[in-house]
Length: 328
Image (cartoon, rainbow, N blue to C red):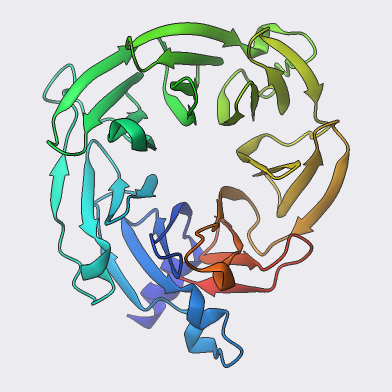
């Protein structure tokens, strides 16, 4: 059993992360369908021991990989192959890891079980947006659990979602190389940006796929096969091309910076002008997800966590260095 567990850890990939509503706990989901819950407050304590950096509870959530997770004010939502599940945070923290409900979007055929690559909360409308292998965005009413509509336009897998709150609009990026903007009020596509068609962004040797995106009002940053690029949405114009050769898998706005990660060990910090401010190395050979814990209820747990192709979740107490790693 010890040998089996060692092999599991050796070949582990952590696809997803989500911070608890109180800000003191972190959930991480791996390629074996497991979710581990870490106590950030214990790991960050001045009295922390090695045991504090291990999961307080681990449970089998899905049969396949846990591709995406988000937290509401009460629930942890996780997505794998074909379905999304809900768990009560209050029960998880008591180590009672019994699923509350599961839902499957209305796929075109009953035999279709596409992976759900991305989950996105729309708090004002109390919606959950799901997207992935069936090339559609599905909107679920979180109060009733019913699927309200599906948005069709992508011609290949959808990898990532982002919310433009003021509009309100959802952005989606996929394998087809397009970023599409959808108006939630009309449930229609309002804008398409085919990034790879812009010569300054295109990198044909890496492909056209969009693997990450984030938005901040009138601005969007996205990357993947094409170069990581800052766009002005109203004019559909690329304004900054970031000089990063490796494809990026996660990107986020943070204060006056853009943080990105992907192939390679480093979390990259960019100025909006395109200047690379810093590259902070982590412990994983490749990074798939970044999580910023900015819950006001737990300012002492304000950290950046990064995870990917290993059993470790790196914790950055400031952006300058990796403080320590949690171990799945």
